[in-house]
Amino acid sequence: MTTSRQIDEWMQRTRRYWYLDGISDAAMGLFLLLLGLLFVGESVTPPGSPLWLLWGTAGPLLLVGGAVAVGWLVRVLKERYTYPRAGYVTFEKQGSRRVARALAGFLLAAIIGAGIAVATHRLEHISFLYGLVFLGAFGYLSYRLGLRRYLLLAAWSLVLGITPLVFSLSLDQEGALFFIGVGAGMLVLGIVAWYRFDHSAPRQPERDDENRAGG
Amino acid sequence: MKTEPAAKPVDAQSLLEVDRIIHEPARLAIVAVLAACESADFVYLRNITGMTQGNLSVHLTKLEDAGYVAVEKRFVGKKPNTLCRLTPKGTAAFKQYRAQMARLVK
Image (cartoon, rainbow over all chains, first blue to last red; front, side, top):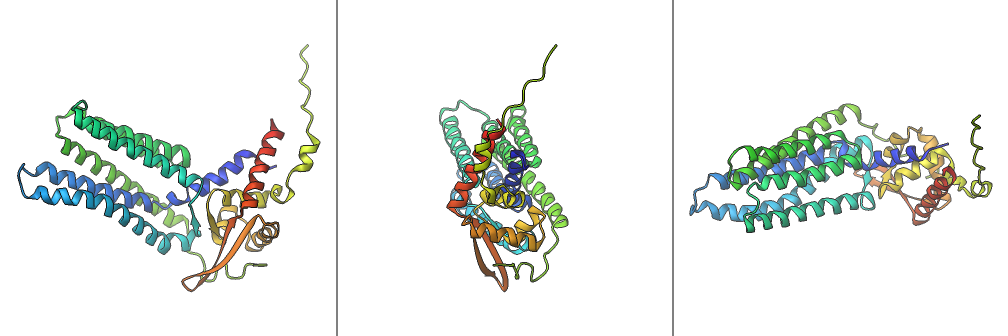
């Protein structure tokens, strides 16, 4: 008899399908790298420089445009490389919504927490807060999907969040270190996941499911 | 001397009420996969269940006939693609089946 554990396993394997090829991780990693580079730009720009106008404009543009661009890039790459090999799956209900809600919650908590910390000057090291938030987000993904690379990213985020406690860094430098570190980690692990996927999922024959019996 | 605890009697009525369409392992795998996503195509279902093309077709047809799965035939570029999704009736049947199974094994 099929056990409840087997049913859960089938469902979990399907939920993790979106993440299996590493494309979404690599794209998000690239986005975080760019965010980190923005912090680098801010940290090396002297006060009063006209470059601040550029950073002030680039920040919101990067956040909004980057999110749209990442979504578009992931969709195009999956349709080009993943779906023809391993099949087409869409996620718009149940698990994916809960993950999206959890991530949105973490992001909101991070923004509110950062705002309070900066406004009250209570938290000198903002990256520690970033580290905790990303630890929670990656930890949840690891638990939910059973993918070990998220556990690795959770630990890496905590390390990056704690590191500035040892050194005396400005807020911009902390942001740069954290986002470049997490972005690079996601990019590398995403590429490794893609490499594995590429070698484990051969391309399907041309007219694969054309003649479904009874369909 | 210690005696073995008596085996719990199986609720025969609950066993009779189990949905036979879903209870079959191959169809249960299909339904469980579709319950975890919005839709999945034939290639994905075949890969994850490990069934042959013909076997999967037969089980999908049974689920479609029962009104548990909706099958849509479309083209992705120039390639034909068969997309399957769980219907509301199929979702309800799957939830009920899991609840029944949970009660039976308690």
